[in-house]
Length: 174
Image (cartoon, rainbow, N blue to C red; front, side):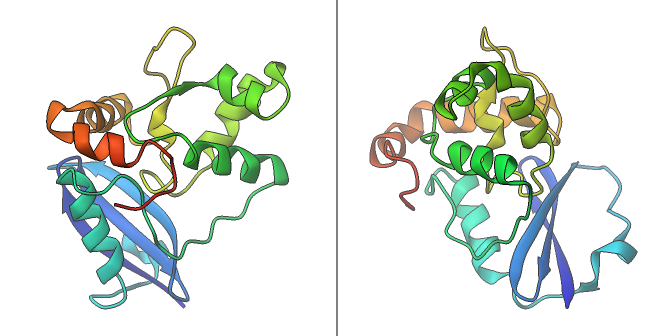
């Protein structure tokens, strides 16, 4: 069964969407923006999203560097490899599309990396905002470039130095 819950964050409205208890999507909309068309999102639910809500709150408060949630995101084998590589980017750091392509074994697949990132449905949980253009340019992000900038600034904030040090090995929940 598909359910959803709308929560509010410093970025704006986040709509959490779950399928049988696993988070399958996080959709963003700017504060003051329109609430999503909920007909396609399943039943509105107050329960079942407590862990996700708490972890998003901790993330935006600078007390969490990565998420520890049951998620389900299906893609091609290449897309899944890209998403796993992105999850390995430490909090407060960035990688370029080309660096990710090289890490995956083929520098010519930088555009393919970008395409795979654009297909990720789990904004913030899969930190696609940590991937930038070749000269650090803030390019494409499903939540918008302003949201990408805000997320990178949050992670780079001086007050989050201890968290960056604790989380220098990606995949370590705060």
